[in-house]
Image (cartoon, rainbow, N blue to C red; front, side):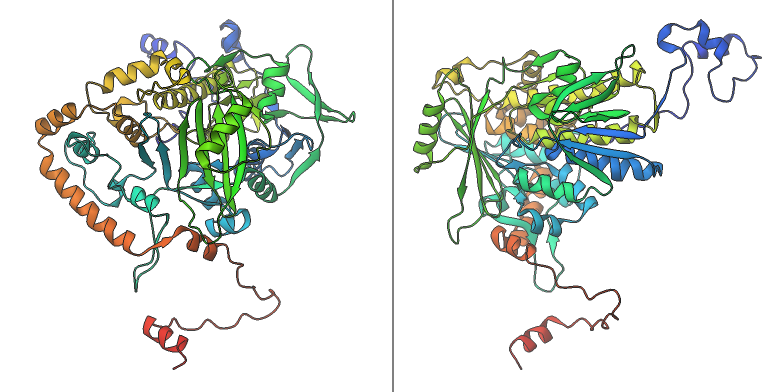
Length: 586
């Protein structure tokens, strides 16, 4: 992912550079940039603004988005400011269920957990599991599958050669008619249900580079809530959003029991209810339904069989009117059929799933979903985070990824303790950035439906939007490279596009062969694949089965003596041979 851009140290008024060139002896500007005399001559957009001191933040909605927002605003934003008087309140409706029976993430969430609490605690407390990628089954209609591994084996030390932007490591197998994902480390671990950790004899534990997690949304929501220090939690259903007359800022929300919660800044995490941005502000909704027609989800769960291995991947299985997800946690498989009700009824959807799995299921609901986004995520003193601002079908874990990107950009680049909520250039910039990100997510998901499957009316009805079509047209004539995509923080990495395009048969082997010949990269590719295979063999040989690693990681930690008692002296580290001798009682 591309890094977030930093703001310039100072800003000049429009036209100031031209005035300096024409008036070299002009006296220096005021120390703080703007003068009242100058601001009076500027258009209204550039007049001096009114800043609000943010002392009370109200987050409307709990769930994953709500508690992630609370953590970022209380730990990362508040800590950096040193504002001890900041009040953060989460208003959570007790009678509105949290969406999702199983959820998968991207590597950005893994980084977040490492900074928050550490991986082993997270695995132990939430019963989460590892996600090394996605197994896509039957997306071309012939029963075949392809993998979308998360890692890039060039991180294992495979050298870049001129031209550095050309992905010869992945283009070579395409040119030879082989899957680009086949020898990638995570793919090998996925197929054998292995964890991203290896323990070679006599060496420290080694980790694969990129991986993510699977978890139960309800459990993780409670876990994140436990990490929100100093955050007030109020249970109540929001019945009304009260705007200030004149400036249109949100003044407060009124709960069903009559309580009124006031704030300076509001975060709309109300999920599909879209209470503030969609309700109070009636913002324009940009629908993705024409090209992402899945509009319902039939969730259910399946327990693990006794002693069975636990997959380390998400399973996305294309069916007649949508696709089935299977997300493994330590305790069960969280599943669901994401389908379009224009082509199949709820009962027919359940029957199709039961026929595919070979056993009956017990759905616990039928959720209506709508893919799309608001034109603006941030209006006045309210920002929509997560499902309340945008949603695309849950095929590539874009929901939590987008939530984290929104929060990181908000707290690191935009929000300050004294903020002008009428500063349109700032809000417009944020809204454009987030809109571009979610539109790119849409294009990536639309690409999954371009594999030529046409065996049902659902698959025959799916088209392709203009921007995704432009990308596909480009990549029919050249191998995809990283510079084909806009580099920004949160963007989908090129390797994920590459595996999807290759898996669906959308890359031309002849194009790859011509380019490999032109750049003279065959020897480099063979050498790189040989080195990758050697390193991968070493890692896989000692990789730990997924279920076993989770069992060990989730074991209760050893009790820590009370702080008032002296700690016992640390024992010297024993050699491996000595440990073996002692374990045998010799």
